[in-house]
Image (spheres, rainbow, N blue to C red):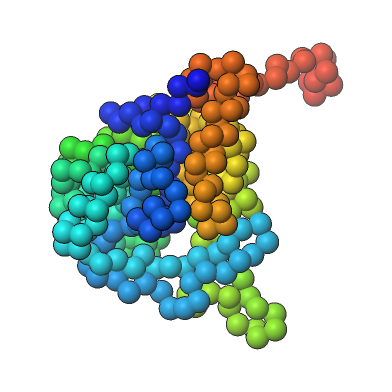
Length: 315
């Protein structure tokens, strides 16, 4: 039987499959055994109470879905008193996703939720930064460095930094997060997008713009993860359009240590355990003793220099 355990910083997970933040809640326990998952990742928590964006918040599009949920949150006290005790009933490590509009707010929130039972913090720095006119922290290396530095000083827990795909500098952003003490990266959040109803002429989302997830974004985020894996030494969790075990294998080959599943769970509540089983079968069929052997195992075909000799004709 394949060893499916993986190590992310100081954490050892029983397998590399976990939910993406915002796509998972304790209610899923009615459909699957949560103890089978590699980790549990909460919906994003904010210090303040948040109602979220206006309806409609979700729209199906070709190749995926759009969402503009708006991070509704019941705040820190509710998480501490209600949510955290509930999750202690399951064995996988609990990763808590957090969001704040300022670097100081991120640090304060990280300190507040560094509680017994929390295994790691996932800092969603792909959210708007009011100090940068609403641009996400992870859009630029400099703003990434500022927020990760303050987060690192605020908590001793493993710190996972969730990146945005909406930047042309993702490798540089990854380097900045690594330099300031991140323990792992999550690559990546949704891609900014929109859709319009041609019959009503109205936007499909109440917030006009939203995040695109699902199979349509996989080739893009897979490329970005590969670039990050070549740029940093940190473990990377792949996230974006993973619907099957073979999708997960692609991310592992590109350099991921683990994967997060989002849209697939909306279509099939058993998507995560099915992917775990599929990874086990894939490794067993290829004689791999451990799933970790897949990480970064992409094969680069050597270039035949003679075939390319016409590019540099002799002078």
